[in-house]
Image (tube, rainbow, N blue to C red; front, side):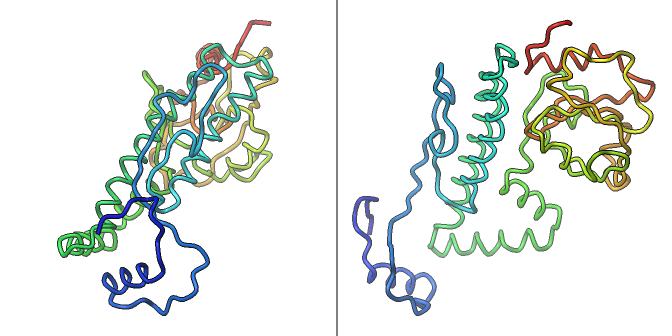
Length: 276
């Protein structure tokens, strides 16, 4: 029977549905709170209008599967927080707050579509739906790489911000927690606690010129990465610009050294950089 979300759910109805689907009511009794969960999918067309910015459930709602709404909201806050701080401090570029919608709206749209697919898989209690779930459940166990891909997608760890004309395929992705030697922290995550841009110089790489006019916003650290042998995608990477939210903003792969010009131009995407 079809029910609207506004109709009160009774305990007898819950037990009846559980018994019909699972063959038992699992001994449930004395519920403290009952509610109906539907798949009311909504996403704001824009995450910013002037001084109003939307994040979390204010920007998107979907069926609550796997805590994806929480992960999505935390990522919204992580993206928006440092941009608001830069705007308030007067160090943000003119397009900085607009980049919040540009980067986060596609991520919300992706999660909304994923939860729709999961709803079709999980909530179909027909024999066809049961057969589909059984077949799907066989796949992750026999394909570890698929299991990892689905887990990272569910957690929101595999989503990246597309960057046109990126200097490296890893640009836009989240920075992994690489073990470091010779740095103030033992791994890359420890370098991000001050919520500043971090320029990580690996090995003998050096810039040909200082960046005195952005020292207040950027920390430059020279170190050696200890565990890249298991990460072939990091071969040849010598300089990494890590954003305050942990995403990679730029990568240099030239071991002979870098001028500050390319890095400064990249930082100007987010910061109001002026020559001293």
